[in-house]
Image (tube, rainbow, N blue to C red):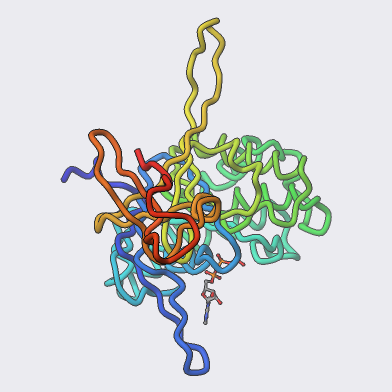
Length: 309
Ligand SMILES: Nc1ncnc2c1ncn2[C@@H]1O[C@H](COP(=O)(O)OP(=O)(O)OP(=O)(O)O)[C@@H](O)[C@H]1O
């Protein structure tokens, strides 16, 4: 496989089991994920579905129980201590929900970026000041370089956090609920900033979020359910009959390599599908029907369930 064809984030059959007070919790249950170079992808899912667990593994903070996890050419499952440090310093940038976790409170915006430059040590010393100014300018906060976090709004702090995350020139940006503490306007500004820098710097970005507005800013939204990818919404721009450009969103269920897919809860709920279902192969689709037989009461087996095309 050529280097160009490799995705920047690749998870395959990823499993993470936690043991707490003798009880096992399967936070990730064979998760597959592929994010191509330069993509901006949102990861959504109910509380407890495994989003933070996945991000912890991708950030190099935690190791999976089984499966494959690769980011920017690094194999996170076999990585030694030195490679892990280099990976965290140079290959990935992070933004966390809590603004206080992203920035050092007693340093100004410019000093926070300078500190990140110092730690990563990848940008030549003479270029650091102009790189920092350029980043803040690109993020629309050029005039705030000399302010400390307490003198900035939450949205401005997250944009400074973005500049800090990008200071080491990472290939991949991981963001955990970056707009979780922000109002609508500030969220939109942060998301637009992420889109802009992603484009300008050719970044691959994965944003974990509960924020529905994020979907408007990304090409792909991946939903996790019970520690596994369940659905994906792809967005594209098309030209309609009148020649106007319209954004189109299409939802797909994710079929893993073992042939498993998760039926949306609203589909199974609407048709009372549970325990077992009948499948039949039709010329261009698969039909899924209730599995109960006549003798078991309720709706009969001949009632149609749902068609999986
Ligand atoms: N360190 C841990 N020890 C034991 N169980 C854990 C640990 N971390 C996470 N879990 C469990 O793993 C599951 C997934 O948790 P995770 O935090 O990844 O979900 P999440 O989708 O990020 O949720 P939220 O949106 O609320 O942050 C949950 O059942 C959680 O209780």
